[in-house]
Amino acid sequence: MLDNAYSEFNVLQEKMKKLESQVSSSKMINLEFEDIREENYKIVRDLAEQKQKLQAAIAENQQLQATLDESEEKLREANFQRQQLQKRVAYLEELNEDMKAVADANKKLEGQIRRIGELESKLNMVAEERDELARKQINTPGT
Image (cartoon, one colour):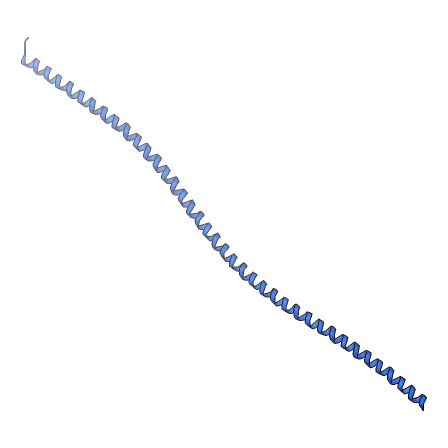
């Protein structure tokens, strides 16, 4: 009976060792589970932070894109206005050249008109002299 009790005691000790081993193993698994849970929490928190950073970057990118689009539109408008001004400048330069040509032609015409006036004056003087000679000839008939 004592042998039987020892044998049962040994069996129970073995079972207790197994149970202790299982408890120890269970505690290790629980510790690993807690570590994994904590790591998972950190990863989820990091993921949330990364999502916030991504959203902020997307918002900033959209704002920068809108600013870029606005700047490009202003650049197109400025280029259009510059082209219009260049056309106006070219037109005014042509107009200025035409005005210079007209001014040169006016100077030539003034010179010609002056010359015509001088010639008319000389013709009038010659006509007066002729008329005076003709009167003298009429007044002195037989001389």
